[in-house]
Image (cartoon, rainbow, N blue to C red; front, top):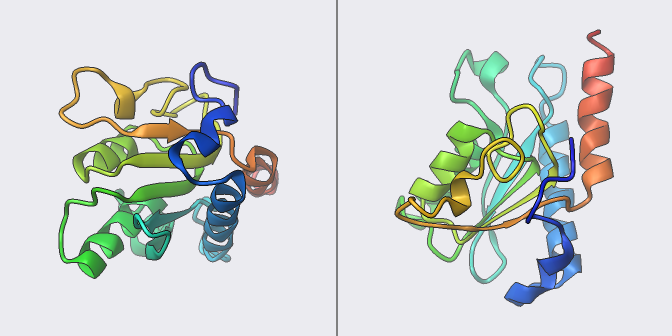
Length: 168
């Protein structure tokens, strides 16, 4: 978890949503992360929020529980949102997650055409929204998403620190 360039939480209000809205969304993603329970999955939670602010998809990691290598919280939430909206195109939506998405999840967000990726903790090992890679804002991509990182960073990071401290 590190401060990556160009994705500080400062511009949170520039898109018409107040800081409180992003904080509320990330708090709901934190609740999703806690839903992994004792499954052995890393506690990461995600939401997809539509343009009106309604949650249309929720997810938490299910890789261990479902023996699914694609069972990341973001993928679960994107799938649920697509089903709820009746379309794989999630234009106008925001993907909200407790940890900076990996390359697979950032790529899925771009392919789903989300407008924005909002996340809590930075991932300096596998983050693909500004830390290691920056897939949502790659100028070569067919679609680009706004990235807002570091929302409730300490709370989100504490979930992961606690999880991994118990295993090391």
